[in-house]
Image (cartoon, rainbow, N blue to C red):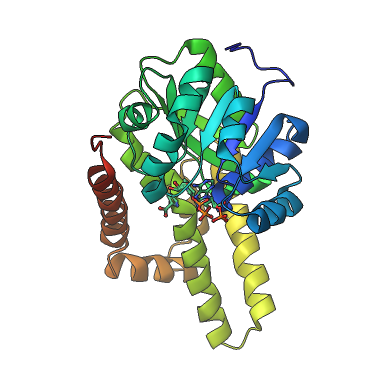
Length: 282
Ligand SMILES: NC(=O)C1=CN([C@@H]2O[C@H](COP(=O)(O)OP(=O)(O)OC[C@H]3O[C@@H](n4cnc5c(N)ncnc54)[C@H](OP(=O)(O)O)[C@@H]3O)[C@@H](O)[C@H]2O)C=CC1
Ligand SMILES: O=C(O)[C@@H]1CCC=N1
């Protein structure tokens, strides 16, 4: 394949749900042409819904999507990956597109094997903030992937946020816990903060505005200043002031342990999926 990205590089998405939808919407807002993207879902109804939502052509014919693809993005649930890949192996071997999988847990080796073997496979763990161009994607490429192919995938995901490559595939479990799944942790924290505000008489709209824009401001300070989160926290926390009491409360309740356990549980599930779905003879 031509590894030089240009506006005629064809990118097919097998599965256009929450994650692929966020990536597609972000890509279209950041320089990719809807005409160079094609998606698939399982039914004409969901294909029509996805077309309406994301403004690209979505069909329910995976084989046609492979034929179209220079880059084939696999974005179905991990449990669907084996059957979906096996059904496409012959077409993929005929076309040899660059494979990109966003599925949690599943190894590059298994994906290549299910698709007939000897393929360049990049695993990507993106997150849904890609929808607003603020995604954070961790990436790993197998040995068959050329540097130019890595550059192409980097360009795709850099269009929807930041990218970070890891050399060891094992690290993708931790990437999932710190990027792929992590937006949900912050959303959950904001839900709790809103609930506490509402319990004290704020309207839901007031609590939402206060909590979400504070989260945005804090995130921007962490990414746009050179200060470490610890320094930023210290600047808010006046000695004997109000913040100090809140932080002391978090410490007493064991915030580090709480987060450590959540990250361990996330990694555990990613490893479990990898083991459950690993390479079965086909
Ligand atoms: N959601 C997230 O935040 C993240 C998800 N991921 C990974 O992304 C992948 C998708 O997750 P998510 O988007 O949340 O899942 P969704 O359930 O939202 O989307 C799954 C999509 O796959 C389609 N699909 C299912 N089976 C097939 C098939 N055989 N052929 C074509 N399309 C099919 C579905 O179509 P239909 O609507 O017709 O059923 C749907 O469009 C997973 O592997 C997950 O691990 C990675 C990082 C973050
Ligand atoms: O929860 C999940 O399994 C997917 C993978 C990372 C984020 N969502």
